[in-house]
Image 1 (cartoon, rainbow, N blue to C red):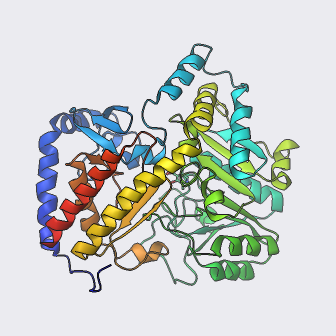
Image 2: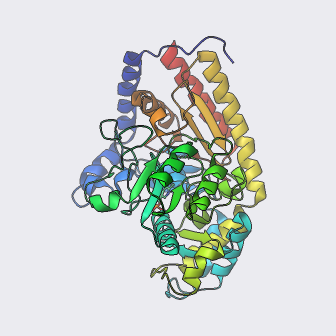
Length: 458
Ligand SMILES: Cc1ncc(COP(=O)(O)O)c(C=O)c1O
């Protein structure tokens, strides 16, 4: 470690890099730029989800294989985006291709259960220790089910969530996801802020907000609203703020606070599930919640969602008191892909592979941070990793607000123009590696990071 403090980054130079790198990208992607104009005739912004576009323009993908993806201009990239962390199995993994092909020939949808669902549920139960599972089609559906179940089990309406965590786009939780300082309220008692127009204010007020890594704040909300809180939902480790770990004892403390107040705890493991460890965050941090929401990585690349829970809550579904439903729940194709992903690809060996590659990346990036005295920190966990462009540690959402987005944007462009594709909203997002990533892929990331470090400091 350097004993001197971080250097002052010349933001004029960073802006110059942004201009140069944006032009280099435009020069490489003429077809993508033309397609965006064409697609915008029918698709708002030229995309199918608002988070598929980000400056300077959407990256239109033609195909992927292993650790790589190709854009529609024919440029290839090592994929660290991996579809927001879904493709931990790598692209077009032969086991997934075979499972889906075999299944589609037998019919792809019945709205009736197929036998793969039990194998998937058994595997998730083994990974998490939670006995009962139901499926859905997205992370949003899984967290929606968690909210409904906690409310139904307690007969209470209020929920607690952490400021700065995204749990999907349903009304209960699209609250204080990225609130700005002019509306976020006092740190000790954050306001509940609608993330989008279209949320009824009365719903927003049912969701109380606390800072991540602050168990005392959770206690205060229970004191302020006695017997009114159904439960708390959180990502046990934040993955949209680089990788922000829970402090020792935090998760256990909030579980005890919830239970002492007759309320439940739900983990949103949509991103951490089957990625940060074989048993997800439950294994990584040694705390088992009452409910866990899974999605993304467990589907092997097909749309998926899952909610698992203890009998005390899931018995509401068993007894038919709460109807957990959906036409595509447990869809045969998804279950076939999920079975192959969980039982044949994301075996314990896969997690040793992630650790090995992340040792290479973490060591190399940390060496560059030290050598160039960068105001940056790297954290990795299982298949996930992230760099926060700030010298001080980030413990919760408000700690990250003063990170200069020009720096993280320039770092993203730099990697992209040198063959590494990271999630477009790279200021916040963690990256995800896959079983198909190689040491060479890891070294490319480090090499690019070193080049960027040199360019912004010398
Ligand atoms: C932590 C977390 N929960 C829930 C969701 C919602 O998942 P989906 O986009 O599949 O609805 C996301 C999506 O990125 C997420 O990151």
